[in-house]
Length: 141
Image (cartoon, rainbow, N blue to C red):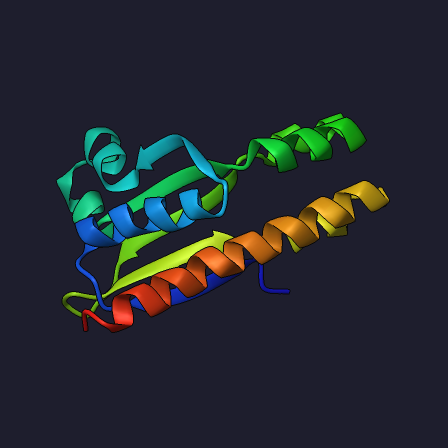
């Protein structure tokens, strides 16, 4: 089972992060956390490990309405929130990979029908955000 949705967009890394934030916001997601994995690796493991990874950020995206419904149905799901979205530099110049967690993984862990509804809605919104990234950048390529 694939647990992410992934696209490659023709944007430099920094610009791709900004566009990803905008696309998520258009779908009602705010960013609760941001982890600069490369900087963390550099601090904890040294420059060599950081360079091997390359530019890599994890955005903790949350749609409060969806999160509220999911937690009301099953409070333990908080351990799986927020929805992580990875933005990482591609091996090709001026291309960036954006990967979003597939909310259907929640359905694999819960029998609650409300969780299925939330996962379906979140999946629709995350797919729309990724589609917006793809279509929004195709004019600039």
